[in-house]
Length: 609
Image (tube, rainbow, N blue to C red; front, top):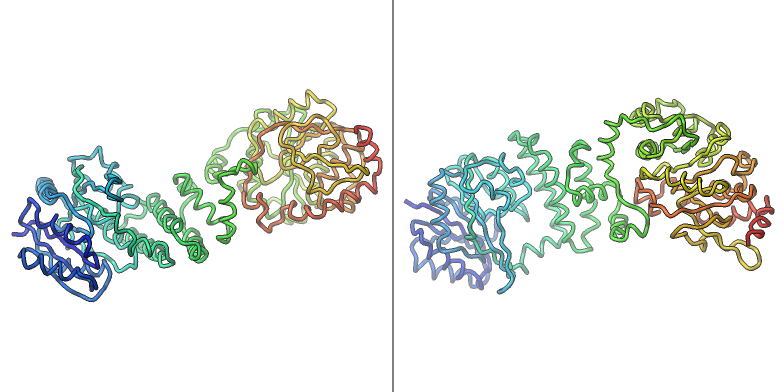
């Protein structure tokens, strides 16, 4: 009786085939059959097979036109008569005791599958052990996939790393499905899930030849044909659903659905990435998992997922990832919004203090209204609690008032947020309405698309206590005045990298937050008609001008910049309503308008100079 059937698919491996066959025919377990399927080889492989067949009656040779490895292996499976099935790639080889040890383990434990370790050979001196490290605590025990779920969808898919019981194989009609690439997954995932008795033999018994990797597999991975991975993902998902595994393995599958295309994407040649990227987006947008589940992904895959669904094109993705390693230079970091969703859901802290004299004021608009809850959450979590956190919204932009606002934002009213309605003063409404309503309070403004660290307000206030007559900011540009007393172009005003002493030449930029002491701005600041005429797209310039007219200097403190809620927009690649994109080329004109209207500004600056 044949104990083990060894199935070998052969295609153009004349340089490696003899070593493979020698390792099989010389096994210490002699009761084996060796089924070799010549898949239309055009080199000397058929002659080598004939020579071995003539010298060993355990060898069968089946010849067929080329059908690929899946077709060749499935052909070989039709001839199996042994109690167990073992696969060997025709350019690899096995330890001479491999089949005996695996067979004995299978018989002793009545195993459907026996797993074991292997070694990769990259060169004569460069090797790598591939072991089932996840199973180290299950050695010599019978188990199923339930004992180590990562084993199924995210670990070691190769079919030759397992010995299969033939009756189990046939009961479930296991086979290699005819995918252009990655056919192993179509067999090993179902086999691992359906096996009722699995054992692990922690010995290196298989030699995986990586010297032959110039070949078919690597070439195809670097071609556009690698998009077949999406067909394979559909196959696995259908199998999980049809066999009632999906709910239990949803997180494992989610990681599989993101990690496997990522591997393909990383290895594609550049010419193929545009098309593949769009398939990636389609694949990722089809994911119907909760934010809580997605947030459990390893950061590498979570970040990749977020990037792909955020950036519409590969070009956008590529530009942002070019900056990723130098992100601190751009003062932006990444936020896990799914983690924040969970925190917002359970948020029960009151983030205000009636004894304070600080009003935190900000505004938003419809395109940002789903992001602003994250900003407000950060403002309500400050170490130094403000008296109020007020979100000013334009009635005309939200005609149904609070019925137009997301529930996650409305819930923050329980934590101290006030939502107030005003006329549409565009970006000016982050400050002007609060100045009108709370003229005797300190007002700190915030932007609606960043996340502030919990020491933000405390740092602004402490600096205010040291500079009682100054406006305090965390980000600024240094205004450059030419020798003829004219303003240099705005683009030539450098961003201040460190703290700056009190000066009229510090232009605060709002994203970092600005603290305005009471009565620090000229009374003309409330004249929106003039402001919108002179600088309709540059509220910071208007507020700066009103500070200079009031002879209030600006201090820039050295402080960690806020974290962007949308790094793509913050890097100025999107075409939404981000003010910077509207203003950058108009600031010189707006500065000129302000100086023409208020020439005293030059006098005040001149006095400082």
